[in-house]
Image 1: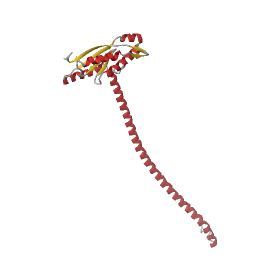
Image 2: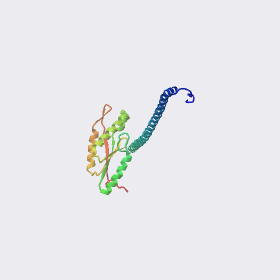
Image 3: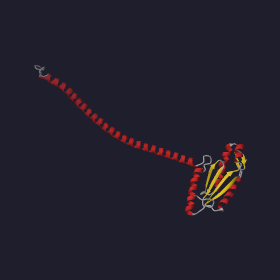
Image 4: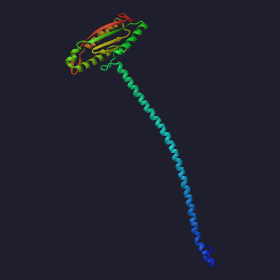
Length: 228
């Protein structure tokens, strides 16, 4: 620039410098401002990246905890369902489907326990067998639905008339058996009389009054039999 200005007056040179210097300073300031802006943006980007990484770590931790809790809940629900199904199957195996009374299998198990207890404590127990009179007539004239209702009502009355320690079971059809633990020779006949009166009350089924009665048989252990 100075070479091009040789021969020109010093005033012209000074005028040119005065015009160029402000522009050069403006460009320099803009470059510095641009560099500072880039530094600020870079720092912001780094900070955002650090926050994103921290958030991702926390999210992974929370997700892991939630996954563990979810697996635990599922395992608990499955375990409860399996236990409920097992209990249901066990109940069905040992109870009569129609009356919900103990069935023959459960009765035989409790009978074995009663025999063991009788030998150990030297006490007696009684077994009462009963079947309903004219039950076949009810089925034939009124239908099996009414017959089933009659068996259910009889089951409820028998259960309500004996002690909680006694076992009322349904062997099948209209045959029932009652296991009376620690029962002497006077107790069982008194229970039989009570049951006769209970069953003599008419049953109201399907809008009809049905009269019924039952035949009883009583045996004592060990008086009437021994286990060889």
